[in-house]
Amino acid sequence: MSNGMTRREREITDRGEIREILDRCMILHLGLVDGDEAYVVPMNYGYTMDEDGNLSLYLHGATQGRKLDLMRQNPKVFFEMECDVTPFEGDVACRYGTAYKSLMGRGRAVFIEDPAEKMKCLSLFMKTQTGKDFEFNEKLVKVVSIIRIDAVEYTAKKRNMPKARD
Ligand SMILES: Cc1cc2nc3c(=O)[nH]c(=O)nc-3n(C[C@H](O)[C@H](O)[C@H](O)COP(=O)(O)OP(=O)(O)OC[C@H]3O[C@@H](n4cnc5c(N)ncnc54)[C@H](O)[C@@H]3O)c2cc1C
Image (tube, rainbow, N blue to C red; front, side, top):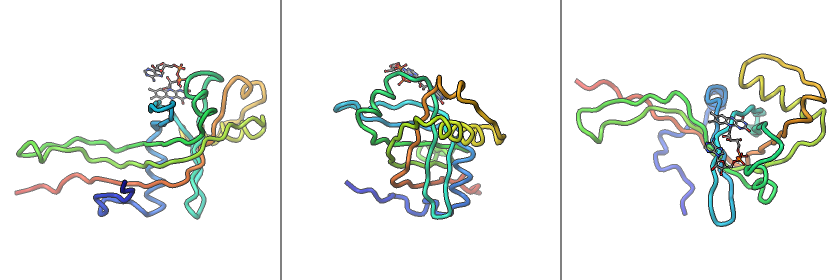
């Protein structure tokens, strides 16, 4: 099975552009393994990316449910997000399409249990989602679960709007 991108010219490798995608998408689709089946769940996220490109995503939600059960059984996850999605038309059916930017990759889920660490993760989550700084207390973080996804590898891609044809 090939893991290389088929349309290599559409790959984004510039860290600044990758950051922009992470700043703009707001929602990711989290792929999980359920026995011999797949389970995908949409979620909001926060992120950090260091200067070497190491990426972590921060998720928050209820303290129980299917996605949590699955991540406890198997922490291997996949994530996908997209932004700037703009459908375009063409003169024939095969020239219709969608401009977009997207990012996807695989990672490992880590359950954050330490209250101080949970507060930090929630602040990172809110910073990505709102651009604002929020502080949390122990009482608040007790009632939510916080998952950090450490990306093992990821790729980013864009499809531009086609140039106008005469
Ligand atoms: C745009 C968006 C952003 C979201 N952000 C968050 C977030 O940041 N944190 C968070 O915890 N949740 C978020 N949700 C809700 C999330 O998608 C799940 O519904 C929720 O997390 C419960 O997931 P679970 O696996 O625990 O499902 P459970 O509550 O255990 O339910 C299991 C079953 O319910 C059904 N189900 C679950 N979720 C959905 C769904 N979204 N749509 C249709 N059917 C569903 C499926 O059949 C699934 O098998 C978001 C949803 C959307 C659409």
